Image 1 (tube, rainbow, N blue to C red):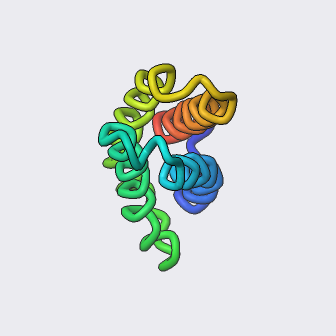
Image 2: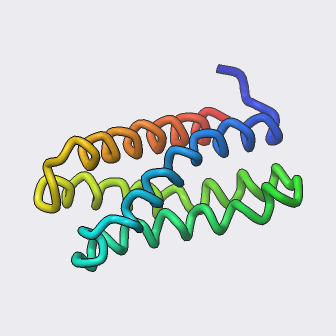
Length: 117
């Protein structure tokens, strides 16, 4: 895959982050997160990533956005892995299973985009 211009990369990553945002919102408003500190850490970490790239996105600064997205990728991966580990203990409900799948898929694609560009 050819290297994407920073502006296109920003738009693609941000579209995938919409999935991250929905998982974060689901977790934040779940009773389970209110009762489990580790699960609450997952939604806080996801918010941290979104907060970091939100400013450059709004300001139309794709190079800064991509730089910060790469910087925050490890935190995004860690939060995803923690959620994958915790989910079976927290709840086996389909909503939680699909949230793990959505987050894992989005983060894998974000990682691929950032690696390839």
